[in-house]
Image (cartoon, rainbow, N blue to C red; front, top):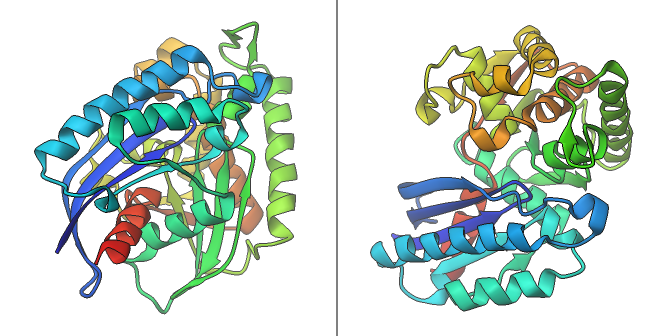
Length: 316
């Protein structure tokens, strides 16, 4: 077994997985898995730059993660991989972000392409699932959403610039003030962006072809937790749960009609998702309607697990 540390830094959250992995047997044993909402992508869609306060929140999380990695005895920088996705791809000042991460963790963040992000997500999401099936993996992030089709291997993938943070900031905020709840025309504007992005994705990825839709990341797992009626967030209950379209539709409508306080009162709602969950749920709903999926299989294993597998393979 190879002990590795994988860090996934997205637009809304930064996540850590410390695990023992055996590429030969396909075994991955979690030692520590955690998430921190840092909203790195705050304002990037509007300004093109990473905000100073967003960088500091992210660096604070990195310092915490560095201590956890040391405590678990992860040895050598080749056993640590830091992957940065949508927000840092788009930012003019991403060099400042890179320098800060190197100073804290000793490794340079890999600012990966959307296609690489898609491949990592597919590996993490489907490694435990039957290999004879065909899958559409949809990873709904803060700034982008990845679509990947494959079975035993990836056959097509595409990353598009729709995500729960990006769409919320673009259509539901004015001068930093959130529409609460959003108006019908604002929801329609989000839906138009999603449909345009699905049109773009479908030029590359056969969205309607696979038999099984697999949904990843916080927007999807939060919708699943609500659908399951959980009183607290339980990854074990959520992992590989199957949520039917009718429930996704009802929960999305509920979230978009709710105020901030009503969303915050939902027991499984992470405070960092309260204002962006409506847009994230709407992306999932639109994907199900576009593909005709009657249910979504929810995976707690995603790009983070894919990064861990790749790190272990390279270090072996």
